[in-house]
Length: 337
Image (cartoon, rainbow, N blue to C red):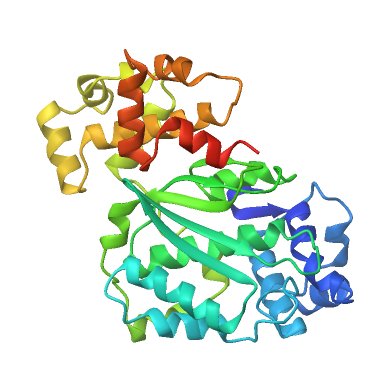
């Protein structure tokens, strides 16, 4: 079975924790979804994505709760749809995300969304008030899946992620995160957050009330797969740089040759996508720097050398431009304590 079109039973087990805490027999939800209960017997077994979509919908129906039992008070069916209607008239993604956060502040005090802008990055962080002390890893993951793919649909293009942070340890199904979140994943962090380029915040909303009707008719199943495939030249170059021993050593000319293009053609096509090679290269170097900063036994001066900077001061200046803070401050805030 294609891994990108299936999910492991361990993920399903995490999804059912909210229902179990409510005293619901998982077999009742599986029966409503027309999925045999034997699927739970082997955590390593995989089930089709279509089955998982039916189970999620069955959970909403059986529990009368779009939070699947993970909150102390249910989110009534229609909560997500009303949020979509409340944001469909927003002019751009920034206003969309801000309004959706305010919407959830009104309907519940147990989910808090924060949109931050630091340097060239946008950070969408989510906090939950886990009053019943449940294992809510799946709930956090599902919130990000929903928001990222809904945001992609709103602007009619994939929201390209730089990295995603989770406050919990890597779950048994962490290998599936490559298809859920095509970016770098960091676990046991101080917050749950997803990071992407600020340029996406300026992108206009491309949907209207008519397209929203069709979107909601196919939710939540339509949110279980990536919104379109990112075949952009930008994504291809990021892929090349991420797999190089040192992104600094990969020249523009080298990339052009790898892609069988002239440098003029590559520059023109990147401009058409609204990007430049140096911007892509900087974003990859930033992510690598953050990876090294998470390893507390690596001195910052050594990281500067690993990143190809001749002087630590040059690394400090570049990192502050990328993230809005110095490497030392970033490490102190996100990885110490």
